[in-house]
Image (cartoon, rainbow, N blue to C red; front, side, top):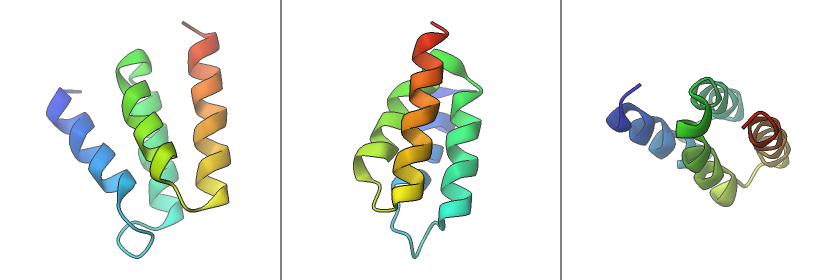
Length: 70
């Protein structure tokens, strides 16, 4: 995945709940996680702007798993 693709996913993941629903945000986090270390900063950015407790908990869990596997 290119840096441009990661950036596009990050922007979509950081969008408001009206623009990007929770289900899609979780899909985006999963896609970013599949790229390992390269996806971590984008997942952090999504986490830092998340308003949904579901997204916050999911992103936190994914980041913990990714950091353990490094």
